[in-house]
Image (cartoon, rainbow, N blue to C red):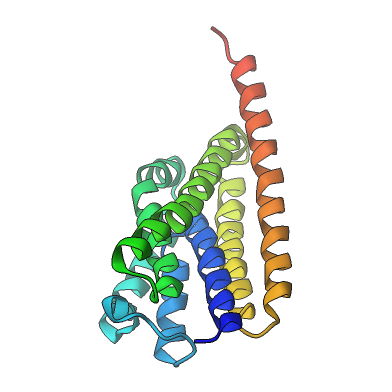
Amino acid sequence: MNQSVTIAMVLLGLLFSLSAGVRITLPLLALNLLAAHGVVTLPHNLAWLGRTSTLILLGVAFIAETLVHFVPIVGTSVKALSTPLAFAAGTLLMAVPLDDQTPLVQWTLAGIVGGGLATFTHLGITGARTVSAPANVATGGLLGAVWNVGEIGGAGLLALLGYACLHIPWYAGAVLLALVLGMFGFCALVVVRGWRRLTRLQPV
């Protein structure tokens, strides 16, 4: 694997990890399909991610994850409780482009980078859902439904951008990733300010 392909794969892993922070199963499902069609070569210790049986399990999990997030309150609770799963998904996704490293280095870097990105993104999304909960109640759950569709679209877009990094120059992919991270940072700042404002408004 030459250097440009390696960088492209790392960018794919990073964007897929961000996607896992939004919706856990969608980027794993995308990776499965890419591997099945020969677009991505999985490491030997992660070959099971490209199997048909894994595709079926991920498909069922994706449907279940989608449906449960349309249930008011339950969706936010499940989101918070599934944080460890987001970390695990981000770690798996980031471990793919690090297959040329020793297992210790591969999984340590994958956990720190991929797992960390997925976890922080997941916590940010959960916080945003919590802040918007009063508005969701006021709209009779309509805002929550729109939010869930937006999450699916956002996770899908991040996965698509990761796939795009395999077909554009590595430096363009790096700029793309920087823009995405900048957008996430701005959104995180808005959520933090909204949460602080909400807590100040609540009675002591």
